[in-house]
Each structure stands twice: as C-alpha cells, then as structure tokens.
Image 1: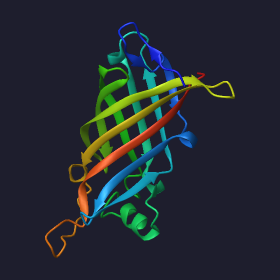
Image 2: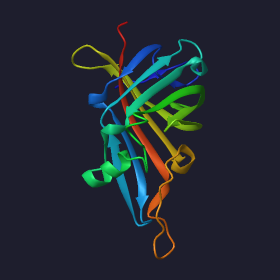
Image 3: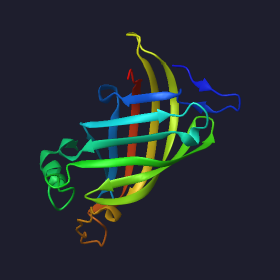
Length: 190
C-alpha cells in the first residue's frame, strides 16, 4: 500500500467517498473481566462510509453502524446476556451508530475525530484517533484505503450499566471499553 502525502506532510485518505468492506475489516472491542483478564469481542455485521474532502481534512466526515445481534465474544451464553435488556437490549435497540461532527489533523496520518455515538438510544460525543494506514489498488482493480480507529469509552454513560461487585470489592465487568476498528474501504463507484 502507498500513502497519499500532501505538500505539508499530511497523510490523507484520497478525496472521494469510500465504503467499508466488512469482509476485510473488523469492528472489535476489549473489556476487563473481574479486573484480571481481558475479554475481546466483535460485531460481525457493520457498515460505514468515509467522505474525504479534496481540500481540507476538516471538511471530511465518517459514519457507520453495527448490528447489536451480531455481537460475538466467543461465548454463546455471554453473547446472549449482552443482547439482553441488561446490556444492549438488541430487540429494542438493534443498531449502534456513529457519525462524525469534527475532524482535526494531528500529524502525519493521524487524526482526531469527534462524533456522536448512539447506543440504546443514548447519544454521547466520543473522540476517536484515526490513523490512515495507506491507500492502493487491490488485485481486482478496486481502489482501497486502510484506516485504524482507536478509542476508549465508559460504557455506563451509554446505558450499559449492568454490574456485579466481586467479594473482594472489584468489578465483575470493567466500565472502560476499548474500541478497535480496522477498516479497509473501497472507493464508491456512485
């Protein structure tokens, strides 16, 4: 992959509209379990769009969704609990949504993106760090761009408040969630 570099040394997503390719991307998360280990999970069904401005990166935007019912932590019993009303309440709130409101270049290929994250009907502003990994053409002639997105959220601020205290006083499930999106997006033909 190559990177698109501007005269000012900024690595950018090439201008245009890009659709996330779920087959070559991941929407994952990590959370502490009993404050001793880390549980990892992912959403198998998700979609997203990047609109890269041709001039100033601050005029760019991104948005996406994940289907709550597609959550997978490798444990069917835990996944059923996460879909239940005690956590995501997948029957009433089928989607998690994010829509950017501000994009700021930090340095090189790294950006600070602020946006509205909605879970269970609750919307909070969440900042993410997005790093442009590169751009190129795949073997089938599709233009692609890679972007890594990282953030940490407090799940309790978004309606995911279920908790049990441990006999030692710790938490059964950590309140901080690490968000790990690794995106491969294809230039939109439309």
